[in-house]
Figure 1 (spheres, rainbow, N blue to C red):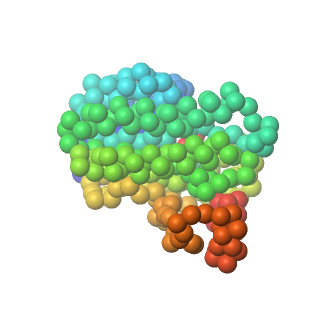
Figure 2: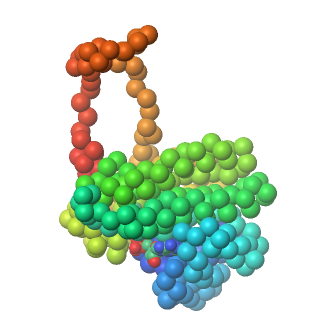
Amino acid sequence: MGILEGKAVVITGAGRGLGRAYALHAAAAGAAVLVNDVDHGPAAEVAALITGNGGQAEVSTHSVADAEQAAAMVGQCVRAFGTIDGLVGNAGLNYQVPPWDDDPARIRELVEVNVLGVLYTGLAAMRVMRERGSGVLVNVASGSLLGKPGGAAYSASKGAVASLTYSWAADLAGCGIRVNAISPLAWTRMVEADEVERARMSRDLTPALAAPLVTYLLSDLSAGLTGQLIRLRGDKLHIVRQHAVKEPVLTSPRWEVADIAAAFEHDLVPEPPPGERWKL
Ligand SMILES: NC(=O)c1ccc[n+]([C@@H]2O[C@H](COP(=O)([O-])OP(=O)(O)OC[C@H]3O[C@@H](n4cnc5c(N)ncnc54)[C@H](O)[C@@H]3O)[C@@H](O)[C@H]2O)c1
């Protein structure tokens, strides 16, 4: 019996790339999968692969970027499979542009999918999960949240996903709902389109390599694990350290510019610039 036997999960953006690999792996582990993607063809192909192998799957073409459609997506899962045990907020957009050439309409579209999409689908899912007292949310962040040259809007959107993961994990800890985020790395259409990623990625990093992490997080094997950002890159699995406030560099009842300057002159610990951190 598979470790997701009897569970119903929604995977957004599952028509291609990483989402497709998560859907196939979860189904092979026994889950009934709502394969969501705005592109019907690829989503239908993934669902057909699952049902062809004796699994359970339905297609949803709802857009995560629309709150009503996100709620309808979760509703479809509940109608089709009786409930929703897990949601993988994977649908995402990315593009590469110097910030001074970025375009407000493009920024808005990216934020609507990458941030609001995770929020809208997550809210709809957690409402059902709270009533039953259990559930798992897996949000998809990215290593770019540490700062990515030419990808400011994308990296900001993924930082937002990490922050909302930490907040939801705290909000939902008493409701039996676990919330984690992942930072995968795999050769997909998104990477093909991204010069910086393309230059540093090996074709050996297939989406299938990252899929067992999602199945693990959706399963009861990860019971007790919540509020974490987990990075999987090829042969390495990491927990990403959360932002934390360091010890004060100076304590003072009032502040003069010169005191602040002096404190930093003596106590500032140099860190690599964000672009360098992202390459690690
Ligand atoms: N590929 C990587 O190395 C990598 C690294 C870090 C994070 N990620 C993240 O993983 C996720 C999947 O990326 P990928 O590389 O597989 O990309 P991809 O472009 O291959 O797949 C993304 C899928 O999302 C779908 N989608 C887009 N907008 C949607 C919407 N509004 N509603 C529903 N579906 C929508 C697309 O149709 C597409 O099938 C993204 O969130 C991405 O930011 C990818």
